[in-house]
Image 1 (cartoon, helix red, strand yellow):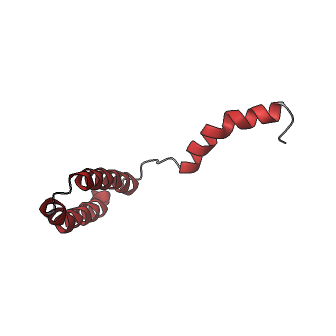
Image 2 (cartoon, rainbow, N blue to C red):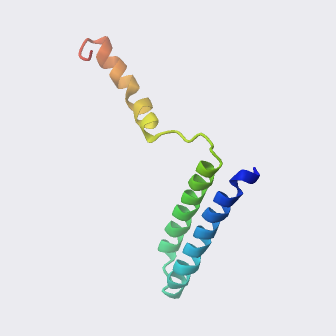
Image 3 (cartoon, helix red, strand yellow):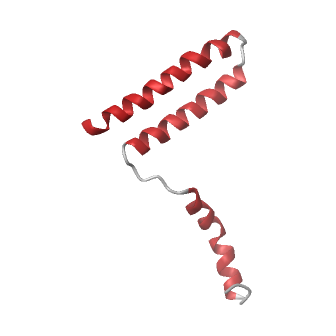
Length: 83
């Protein structure tokens, strides 16, 4: 766990810098919708970057596409329309 610490500190420091740069502008102009989207996307990116730094398995987006289209592909193969 200690070997991941520099990467995690860098990721969290970058996220803190982004918040310190962007949050005052968003709050000053009272952009409530943008604040929600900013927070959601920042937390999603922070989670993904942390998971990648900890070397967790993250599925490839292509896996989701294959899982979605597999039944249709199997159906076409069954009718002989797809090799």
